[in-house]
Length: 377
Image (tube, rainbow, N blue to C red):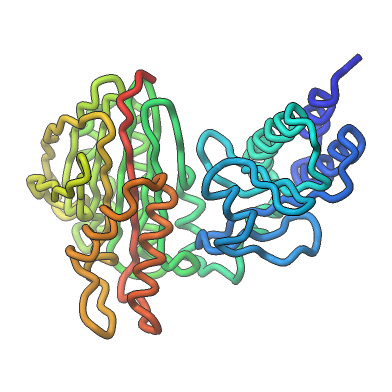
């Protein structure tokens, strides 16, 4: 006899791309006797969990659903059970179901189904617009649409590292972006900022990102990746526009970090509760000159080190009382030391919005947080 967990799994994996949520409801109703099922997906701004299936109201930080999302654990409130919907560290949302099963083994099976749902939604998103439409509270600008489609994800967790990034203004971002990939025991991270505004800036950042990916996937060294991307941008714009970028290559077994600062964002290291500004040798941004050369620098990370990268749209943001500044930034990073990287970048940009009040950001802001655990991968 096929067990119920396998039955639900087969229903989800066999569903049409846009019908995964309905097959989830069918499976949980038929196999587990649940009467009420909803999936909430987090919006682009990381500010609301939006219902995917029914007509539930969105939920906001502090609600039971958000406690499950933030702490990545089950939460029981009244007759509802909340479970995180996550795929390889990519926090996508929360599954709510009722009534709450008394048997902890059954709740464990539902937690597995919530994780499976994350994987299936991630896979199905390539074949439907339903899930991308659900996670927006208002229309994205064309430039922002391009930027979000360019990202590899917003968070990732593996045994040896935890990583997250966020863009602001989320619904109107232009040229700020980030990229990452894990391969052969190494983690590659780039944080980019293309010149200009609107679609032109997004296209510039996209060109640099794809050029870096192309070089990386060809097995080129970090320096040669920078050279190839530099040549691609210069060939397209002849020096009129350029892309500031920080390139990183982290050996996950040793913590040895290679870095190229090509007009990069600010880099801060938190080690044993103390914040250090990482001073790298500045090199030319991508596309500024025809024959630029790049040389990586080395940095040895220690277990539990945290790196935070922010663009000038964060530390140079000006509110009614002046710039946000390095002091406020360092204080905030120290205060959020116990948080997971996704909570750090969400809280940091939320804190920035609070600081600015009614004042709009003068520039895009990107924040990326990387923890190296030192655990063998």
